[in-house]
Image 1 (cartoon, rainbow, N blue to C red):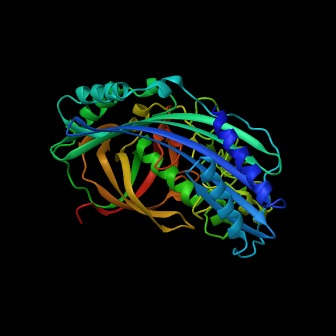
Image 2: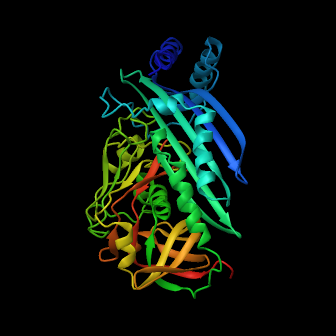
Image 3: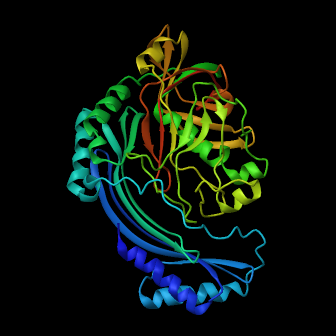
Length: 445
């Protein structure tokens, strides 16, 4: 933990007490360190590192609320932040929906930190890349290896104080064979989980099978989705499905207490179990725990921040996110089942093995209907055997419908964490065998 962040938070609170003694105030101090090694055409071409310390101040006085941030953390910078924020409250509109400050509360966890990530050097990240490139067996490769370290402290004028720390290590790589790509990704709190050799061997072998892909007609196909494709489903559930703001506004598919999913589906948001990536509290200071979103097929909850929780007459789940999008679940975990991947494939009489989705865009947020493309490898499965590679498809699919009761034919026994597209989080899920996926066209047409 960094006591300097706690000192920053309390220093700003003291300045607010002097400038506006009756104000409610909350301060979040965060430091993010990130190191990135990128490679293309099988060569490392970039090593970059950045470290940012930011302080965000929320002030509520006389029924008006303002929020401001700074990365200037010396005395002058903090005084300017307080002066600017307090002064702006006089110009802010009345805030009738102000939910108040978080009262003192304990954390469920402080975050998972791994010393190997903190100590990782450019040579360590290059070692993972080198193992990946060599294992790909001469194919052209590209991708990145990234390590992150977050520390934070939060304090408010209601007497609530929390702090936390977390690490993450991510790898994302592709191998290319005659214009066809195969990909593998993984995210962890530990450097030792980034097995570049194993990932490179897998993408190399897969890429070599992708030559001479055939084009199949659009239509409904049974599918086995790899964890990379499942991560896209989880990402969009976080954006559109379990977002408390969208649920309050009637724009979410979620109906609490209803069996909307197959009983094989259990989904949680879990940033606090040791070994999981995530921050133990949100920017409003609300402690996070394990949030059950789908319990054996039954929709159990949506994520809330303090404002959406007040409107829903619920409690905040600690999922405040900036930018007005609404509460976000950033650490989704789809529980694994008991079926090894080869057995998932063996059960398919005629269907498709899909590695990855991309460029997915929502068409109907209330039904969570999305369109997107497959990529990084699609193969025809016939009589339980992986056969001919298939050219990419465009699909249009309601994600909850694909996971509805009776539609999940198998859940893999190994959940693989995938790097988050934003923030300190991950999308963790196993391979899934689904009764159908609606492919509406080929990528060429």
